[in-house]
Length: 95
Image 1 (cartoon, rainbow, N blue to C red):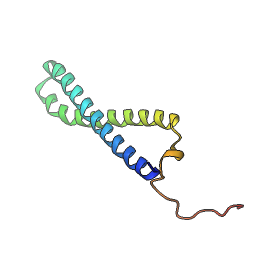
Image 2 (cartoon, one colour):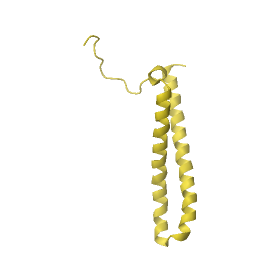
Image 3 (tube, one colour):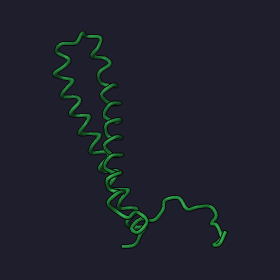
Image 4 (cartoon, rainbow, N blue to C red):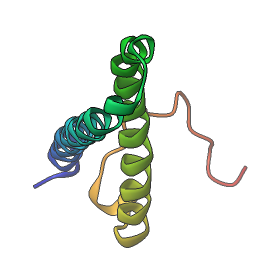
């Protein structure tokens, strides 16, 4: 496989991983919320769902960043992946 195919497959895999982590963290937070809401007043229950949604996105962001950092340390990115954004101009050799 060439670098472009590797890049596309990596982006697709990373996207699927991020979605799975978001859904799992959302479900976990909903389960925890169901246990906690027994002790909370009625007004607090209205805020729970939006906060859980935002927290699930934040958790997935940090997990994604952590896992991506590990992958970048273990894999030579320049060897296997094509850059997503090409530089506008290149410096001449010797400058």
